[in-house]
Length: 207
Ligand SMILES: O=C(O)CCC(=O)C(=O)O
Ligand SMILES: [Mn+2]
Image (cartoon, rainbow, N blue to C red; front, side):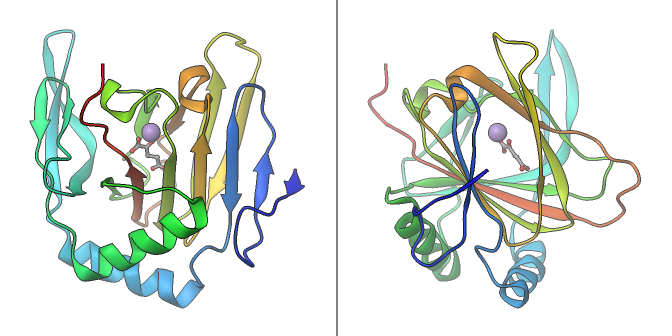
């Protein structure tokens, strides 16, 4: 791992993987601020339990979700259009800080609530057409630490595992989504909740 200069006075680690650009800021939010934000979002967000259709079978998504964004930043997955909830002042301020660190702009964010270690997200890439060719995804974690696993799509021996702790910011860019998948596996021993927010930019005129 290497230290990098991406972030104004923040210590950050470059995760060196083939065909990926991944950077981790383990202490993006100070512990107290992260803890307060976690409590606040747990209450304030309109958490939804969604269903997904896999091979014609409806299943409950194993976590709660919410989609925030600018007007028009709608997102389609599993055949369902998700219209964004407007940003609160607090979320807009948070988004601005993350944009400064990442030197880019975001118009939407997917919120995930993992109620405990039985909740998870399966292997996937954030590669929907509306995210564009080389999306920048900034992922803020709050609450219980959870593992994020990564695997290369072509080189099956290339795998990596990170622990995402409260207040950490993981930034993925370049070919990361094209070449890698990631998942948050179930960890039944974990009894505490976790919130993850992935800031994204929806491109309206995508092909
Ligand atoms: O919870 C996480 O750390 C990852 C969530 C994720 O991959 C997603 O929402 O696309
Ligand atoms: Mn993802």
